Length: 435
Image (cartoon, rainbow, N blue to C red; front, side, top):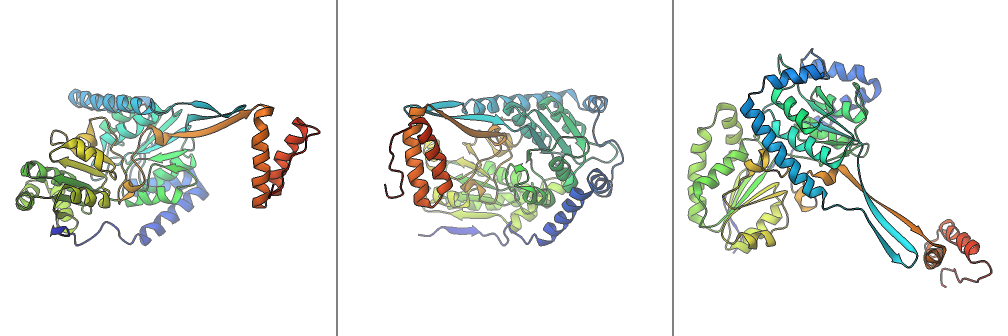
């Protein structure tokens, strides 16, 4: 039977972004034209901050002094986990060379991009973990310069904990600037920083649109929408833990979808009963976000069996995917579309968001059907090279000449012809398209 919606979303995270795009386009064009002057004007207008844009070493040290030691220890613990996992990811990439045919050797090299620009949000929430996630992976990848931009807080500039996290993770510059103007400054190389080759990190709809607009001129991690999460749960799942995990992700924002997919009606109905009370118990801002997300975007879906559950999950392709069900190895083998996977109730998306080591910058809005999240790989270019002996060049040149002529690309064919004539004088080659 078809899946049953015990709760159906009344809205989707896709909305008309034309007004945002127009605003962002105007700001980017102005900053591209007028440079530092325009960036500083927009910073004064939107950030409402008159302190130093670029933090000095003394200011970073002063910020660190404001961070309680226990929080420093927690940030260092999280950073160490992210670093060690990133190092293992990097170890999966290797330079290779291989003799394709006798005398022709081809290879690949992994080269880190030179400069990375990392955006760390600090509006509704201060994303300390984003500084750790974005900067650490860039550092492990081997980027030579890493800039962090974060919106200044009233009276203190960059949040001290964000500045501390960025500094210990390896940032070369920490900038008190947010929004479109921060993205533009990194992309265009303004305010004393080098031009970024890649822009990474989460942000609001204006930051996301700025990155989307600049893609091609610079690389980006991904085009991000509102964060989303899905839980797969069977009869053995703890309804309180399931409900708590759903609420924990709904607090991200008013339009952050959360989904429960289960084959157990009793569990679904109990979660539906519990969630409103859990939301009501949150602090004011968190409660407002979670209530709106649950009311308008959440879904609870009842399926016949685990195969239908898995198929539903792959169709939704969630950013975060949690499995609280029996036979975790079956789910690990079966599931194919997700940004990051959390197997069993002993782990949770919150762990990945903050401290467990996997990256929390992940694909949203079904982008997990074709890409993964931020990792050292995003900061690295996999390039190829080749070299050949004259004998090794011979069969390649012959094939190249004939294929090129069949395609109508005579210039390509002659680049092969001239080598055959030089390396093998006096020999006759049939290099016609129908040869």
